[in-house]
Length: 162
Image 1 (cartoon, rainbow, N blue to C red):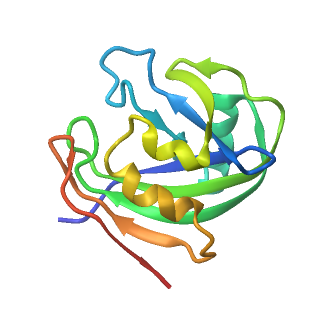
Image 2 (image 1 turned 120 degrees about the horizontal axis):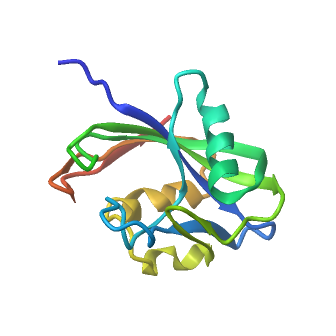
């Protein structure tokens, strides 16, 4: 059977001093698959856009800012991650520079600046604790990971770099 995941972007907006990252605390919608967790910003790629256009659009919609400099940090395959077991495939970006001022939140939750070195203290998906160190490390090579889920639980984690 062919792998036909939902294609998405996931972005981490850095503060100008690079010590903090803008996160969304998913705390507004009962029944949200991510309720109570902290996530980066992003969403589904539209049929008419490439992944860079999607990342820019999602950041503008969710935070009210314009990305002026971003870089691909990696890709992630999440088989079975969706609320109903859907497969997801994400392009993970760091947003190094932006224009505007992020607003306080959106329909999904509250936006918060969090110290990068304290991310591991936040409530988040268990799998995020495995790939986030790769997003923020000094290795310039993108990572490419696979993280299968079953019934909302991470089953394994593997990645490679070239």
